[in-house]
Image (cartoon, rainbow, N blue to C red; front, side, top):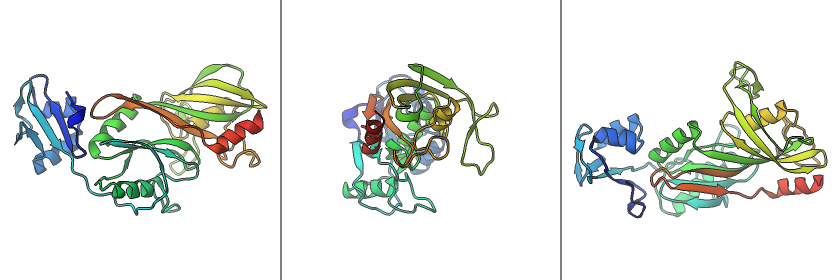
Length: 300
């Protein structure tokens, strides 16, 4: 049982509720990775009632387990980018990413990324955090990005993400009028070659499920709320193209008209998931940016 009030940035505290070995508790109750257990053993960073115990030790009900999760400092160049940070606790930072900003540095975008901005933010808060991204968005997609502050939070949330326990909703504007008020696209997505950026619907691909609901019908366009059941690369963009309603502004899969918008009209507007330590349900929403608001007005 976690006690939220006792949580610190570098300490996970857990009161045991049943007779198990320490290893079983760390793996099954606290969801640590097998790799992290080796580090705990080496650094003696796990304590039971204030004393170091071997992982094979038997733990009884009421024992207090404490795990230090000291982190190295982020190695990104700090830059004050005036990020829109909408939430911050001992495990995660939630950022509302603007369009055209890259999540982390690449060869072609080596600075002014979310990683640079978050590094500046945590330095100014005098925290020691290694920036780890739980989810990523394309450069031209706006919306919610989860940054994990430690390896534990990253492992737990990444597993929840892969187990489809994170509820992800997007708002998009697609070309053409979608007839059905709601629907589901269940089509596998495939990467034709290793160096291919573009994905296609192909029976050789990974299972991919997208649910959509019409929010508003416009002049030869439709505003949709999209809920992802799986999280494949470019999933919404590929699936919208597959049903004949490509996203407006999407150069790879959709309908491009720079007089309307100069990027794909896709915004990650809602995320719902369990806080890694306290297990409380967190839900975040981010209003669509001005360029998408303007696009909708133009098409009304």
